[in-house]
Length: 90
Image (cartoon, rainbow, N blue to C red; front, side, top):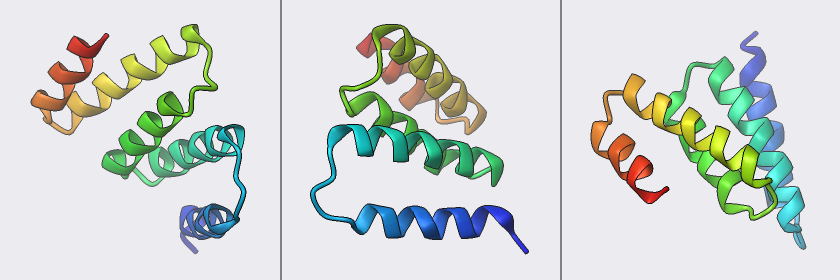
């Protein structure tokens, strides 16, 4: 089977749970990033990385790393505008 697909389906279930805390969002977005990178769905991975940054839970050091990863993903997608925008924001 496509191992990643099941993981993503489970994540969608988890997303449907009410009363999620910022920490829940932080953890699930990290899992999503790993799942999407594993599936080579880098556009979705980029969204998950952004969600991890936006959670407000990640430490400043972690956020710096996440932003570098995000810029690399945008470059690999040849989405240079997004790469430049992300770099300029920080």
